[in-house]
Amino acid sequence: RRTPPNPLAAAPPCAPHCALPPADYSLPYCKPMHFEFTQENLGEFLTGDRIENSPYTIYMIENTYCNVLCKKKLSGHGALSVRDAIDEEYHHNWIVDNLPAASEVDSEEFITTSYSEGFPVGYKEDGKHYLYNHVTLKLDYHTVREDPALFRVVGFKVEPFSVQHTFKDPDAAWDGTKGDVPPLKTCHVDKVMDYQDPSQRPPQTVKAGETVIYTYDVFWAASSVRWASRWDIYLTMDNAVPNRVHWFSIINSLLIVLFLTVMIAIILIRNLYRDIVRYNAQRDEDGDETGWKLVHTDVFRPPSEFRMLFCVCVGTGAQVIACALLTVLFASVGFLSPANRGSLMVALLLLYALMGSVSGYVSARLFKTFKGKTWQRCTSLTAFLFPGICFVTFLMLNVMMASYHSTGAVPFTSMLSLVGLWLFVSVPLVFLGAFIGYRREPIEFPVRFSVTPRPIPDQPWYLSTYMVLLVGGVLPFGACFVEVFFIMSSLWMGQYYYVFGFLFIVLVILLVTCAETAIVFTYFQLCNEDYRWWWRSFMVPGSTGLYVFLYSCLYFSRLEANLTVTYFLYFCYMVLVSGGITLITGTAGFLACLAFTRKIYSSIKVE
Image (tube, rainbow, N blue to C red; front, top):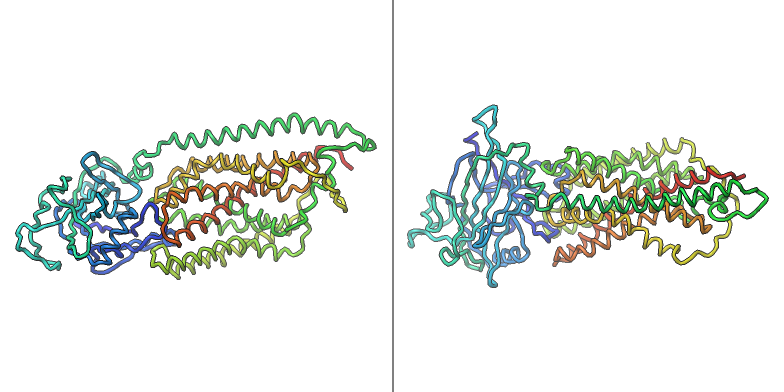
């Protein structure tokens, strides 16, 4: 309604290149009488969204101009911190009615509007720093059709100005306390501030001893945008990234899949079919078996090294695949909108915990197929290895962020919630899935392996382990690198990512590409009488994670980091992300190869 005030909240300021968001009031700004934090969920804590109240007062559909907020005198330290914030391109992140502030910066030539990074602290010109100390809060409202006396906020922009305020009366003085403020000469009480040449209205310089007066305008305008559609312009960033870019990504991925599909079709229809016909036509006494049939007594021999670790990796990969597919699917149909802060992170954590039964089942049944006996140890590793590495890394980085007094540090109570979700939800489900999986019959193979493994001939250079790992991840990475760029920009540059429908398609294409890549390399390997395909079928497509990490190293130059802790934060998190991608792509490749080898060896006559 018209009378109640709309609270303006402040999220931590951040720069396009920063990884450590400081507290919003760490800079010399006006502070509220009492600090209050909005109720936050676990996802908001993990993403560093610590939202505080502000001293700004906004009344619904009530325009006010030249509101004086407070007066601050810049100390030497305060001026230095503001100059550093301007140099590092820090931006304010303000929120009204859960709607983030868009930035509208005016200049002589054009008006720049940004919907993803808030509005800047100030600007630098000719070697001097200037502070934005006046803001015009432009709010759009939509009248509720059912009740014309009710209104909804559907738009929020902030237009900042740098103004060295002066009083109309040169002899006037103000101590900065609440009360009667002498009229200002540099802003009007009957209209919003507009852009003027700096020679006519000097900007507010940043230097020690300067007195800064903070002011603001509030301007309301009617809008035809409905409340349900108010986030559209933020998610599309006013069409800054056209959909054709994402369609280009999908077409590029489909071409790669088409190329691999043609290769597999050639293998299956020509070479493989011809091999099966020839092998079945041979007599057993001929003794001239060649190619992949020659290793039929060894092809299903369990891996000789790290069997348990292999089962753990495949089980964890199946868990991450199920979690990723469900999360992106829910987001693509609109259940996880960026308007609900932290919802994506909460859904990701919950689905990962609930999918623990999948990892336990897959790892236990595969371990039983390998004739493993200590399934409890295998299950414990499945439940604690990858999540434990992630948690220890997260805990270490959280301590580092807390030492810098960053709002990105997760509180202790939220950390306990995260541990409780892991220990009391995920771990029991992993053991439940393992119990069910170990009670099932082991995976049946069409042929048995012999007691004594046959010797493996020397392999050509192009089938060496390092060569196939180097080549195997190129095509899967090429199928998803465009979306990887946008996701990286969302993670590290503060931009919104909303095209989850495109992401779901790209994720499915990535899994198909990994499966087809692994099948091609496994077929060539078996044709050269090398039956050690278990680990290689996992690592060949899993090398996609290596290419993602190498790309992240190249992307890091965009952040222009200047703190050592930023290096730790970025590369530790990207190692975890790349490891997760390795588990996803490796598991997809192995499961496809398992089905492929079972199929082709069940098609030939062997005794």
